Length: 518
Image (cartoon, rainbow, N blue to C red; front, side):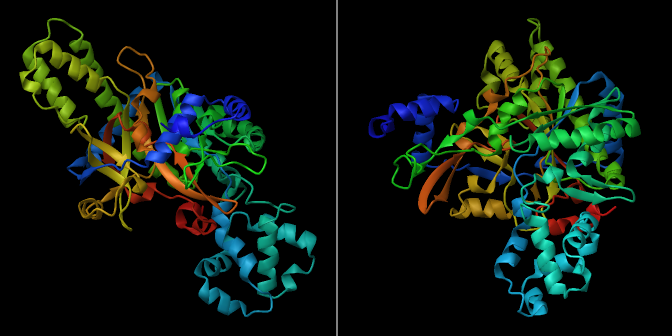
């Protein structure tokens, strides 16, 4: 056992305790890291008609109308993962500062660095340009008289330097995202506005953002600045809360030789274990309906009015399916339930909940059938939007074969797939859709109690990643992704939605795309 070969000092034990962890949990992490990843076994790609639903305009509108008719009877919250700095958005700009020599030909550099060329060409269309130019003229009065290459060097330094605008420190949610006639809005502000379109009821909008501790005060400052104006403009009261990724979800690191990695001061190194840790933050919310959307996937408000109808559609689908599931569960509680009714519920579980019936089900005694169907029906439900993959195939919706032979419909991340196996590679190549983190969740059971979401996680779906720490190769654990392994045992319904619903900002240049231009 690993606990016999790895010895913790009293100082280690205190550090583990102060981190909110237990020795048992740390040893379990070490064992998981040492044993390596368990790959998902893909049975087939989920495609339209085979795990992914597709609706025509009339059907879509029916679901939208159903949601609209019921939304004011519901407690709704919008959950937005928003932690982490925006540093990766500016990667090519840091590269420019590192590589470019002011005496070198600028056109030649731009010819070889397309991202920088796009940035320079689109400069005046960025939402932060006017603020940036004003800051530069304040520092360098004759800035506009400088050659273009010198202007760009000063401009990028002003954007990124800690003593200037310091954009690389800020979280994505607080960067200028969209420029309107009278104001520049952040992604955070846009999410509040978007909540009024679908994630609100009775003129109240609840939003929950997961942020880093380093940024929370900045989010609160921004909220205080915009809240009163937005409430007046939208006739909506905003209830905004924040939480952090708990340190108790951090994971121990070990070296490539399976020894504990220690910092220079002898302390153990713990690392955040990925967005799968946020299942605990999600689990702490007590609402009927939870919409989940990433902080950077937000468009200008006029376009959002059109895009948001698909959120309403997903919610309408969830409510209809959930209502039927609840009716069946109440019927399963009745001792006088008939065999014919069991058959109807069985068909619902197969056709609407995407659950493959276990072998021998038909021969089971009535009470065992009831118990099996209750177990399958009485789970959290998620309805996930799926977008056609027009790029390279990778992670997305797949039918999975579990170790015990069960077949389930899941969202699988690329690292969970053993791409070296020809059969798995072939299935990946046949994939047609991906999940843009666009989902709505029902987290109460048929008696109105909130599910404990931590009971529906596939812990085997954790990743083992190799990192470098001060020149040493280390192995680190990432928990199953929030909408991947952390929701593996939910009831999942996948629905095709158009590509226009997916507009993430991965690099600063994405802000130049039409979806982010008012």
